[in-house]
Structures are given as structure tokens and as C-alpha cells.
Image 1 (cartoon, rainbow, N blue to C red):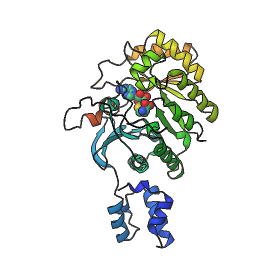
Image 2: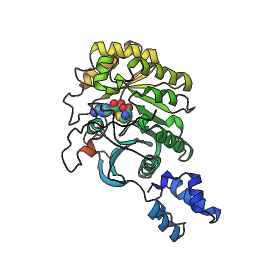
Image 3: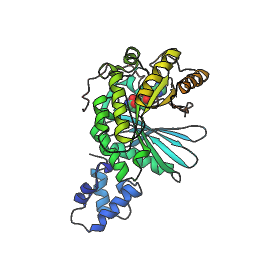
Image 4: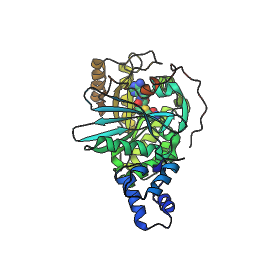
Length: 351
Ligand code: SAH
């Protein structure tokens, strides 16, 4: 079974078969313009609705929902066919909304400070399962306009490269959200970063750097052993050269680990080499990681030091600390049994 949003226009045309042409338009309008599951598309004949509900039921079943006191951040936990669970987060602004979506259930990258990394890899999401998160968020955001999509939920988007790229193209073409409003965040899978630079798209690229020397980065982001910093910087430069878009370096601020003056100096050097923008993220505490986040005052100092060194820097507003803000935490806290650190499974990375 696949999500109805796994079906693209030609799949839907095939499904409608020799029924009148307007059936396809009704189906398309229902799924993509109104964001309705097939059984709620009232313009369709009952039989077709029933058939679609059987063969292509929506993939996301609500498992939990949390909202901040101000109602501006809504975190959803979804159960997928087969039982895997993923999160998406909807962030409202006065005039518009952004959704943060997952590309995999779990993650094989094993970054120690990340709740998803602590739990290990389960499976890739299908194109439809990725799109469905956007469809549902767009409906929930209304009357606000869902303007931005960020692939910063669970999973490593570039380890599920082909499906993520198809989803990105379909968000642009079928949901009519501009490429420049979409950001893909990667742990730094260099071959896929280089491929991404050749896609001819104006999509934003964020790279989770977190450390600017190989020793510390390998500790925080183990895949650095395979794709060291120099290669990540070179691939970031290539992205900028090919697309004209500035790459953004993500840096989770961890107390006493990567927030020292020397870290700022090292970061400034690589950020300038890649002509990247730096985004400092206050670390969200997670159950499986002992170190705490840097205090706000030190984050400001660190940011000023980068600025003095000529780096373009922002500090990400920490949203939803009164809900399970860190990616993977909502799921962790809704497990039947306490989360233990599962042994890592070897997962193929599509290169
Ligand atoms: N796998 C991708 C995208 C998912 S995570 C990647 O690594 O980029 C999105 C961002 O949140 C990444 O920059 C990640 O390093 C960061 N992150 C993960 N856990 C975090 C935590 N506990 N606190 C702050 N940021 C965290």
C-alpha cells in the first residue's frame, strides 16, 4: 500500500483509466489543491472513493500532538504503515507558517546529541509519506499560508536521496512552493551534496557542521570519519558556485564542547572559506546525551566573535522548549518502553 500522494499525475491518469477526463482533474484538485484524502473528495463517485481508500489510504495516522502555550508551534507524531513513527513540526508566524518534516523513520548517522540519532535507523520514507506531511501541515496552517518547508525533522535526507529529490521536485511543481522556500539539511554526505549541486534547483542547503576540526567533529558527527571537513567545505563551495545560493552551517551550541573561543576562530575560518552563513542553534537537551546547551549569554558572545571575524551569523530562536522540542523527543517520550540506545544497524546510503 502506498500513500495517495505517492501517485503522481501519470499514476493517477492510469488509475482513472478510461473514465472521463474530468475525473482526473477532480482527483488532482482534491489531493493536491484541497489536500483531501481520497475518501473525502466528494466530487468523485462513491465506488472510486471506496477503491482508493482500500488501495491508497493516507499513510499518516496521528499518534500524538503537542502545542506550545502560545499556540505558535505544533508538533505532531505520526504512525506510518508498519508501525514506524515520525515527527513533523509546524511553526507559525504572524502571516505565514513553516513546516519541518522527516525524511526517514530514525536515522543511521548516530550523532550522539540528536534524539533521532540515539534511537537508530528504522526505514526510509516514501515520496508520498514525505509529501503527506506537507499536505497535512498546509491544511493545519490555514488560513496562514504554508510558505516554507525544511527537511530538518527525523532522518538524513541525503541518505534517502532519490525519494527526497522526487519529493522536493513535486513540492515545487505540484504544491507550487518555490524552490527558494525549501531547505534540505544534511549531516554532510559529500557525494550527495555534489549531486545536489548539479540538480539545477535553487533549493537551500544547510550543513550540520557543529565542529570545525576533524577530531571533534568525528566525535559529534561520526560520518565525518568518512567525509572529513575539507571535503564538506569543498562541496559547500561547489553548491554556492553552481546555484548562487549561500550554504548555511548549522552549529548546535554545546557547553564547553564547541563554544570556546578557539571553536569560534576555527568556525570563522571554514565559514569564510565556504562563504557560508552560520546558524547557531541552542542545544536541545535529550535523554541520551549528558552535556548541556551553552548559556544564552555565551551564545551571544560567540556570535559577536564570529561577526567580528567577518562571518554572517544568526542565532536560531528556540521554539517549543515547553513541548518535546528536540527532534525525536516526542517519539522517544511516546514509546511503550523506555528508550534505550539501540545498536546501530548498517544501512545502505544511496550514493
Ligand atoms: N540529518 C539532517 C537533518 C536533521 S536534524 C542533518 O543532520 O542536518 C536538523 C538539525 O538539528 C541538524 O543541524 C542537527 O544537527 C540538529 N540537531 C539535532 N539534535 C539536536 C539537538 N539536540 N539540539 C539542537 N540541534 C540538534
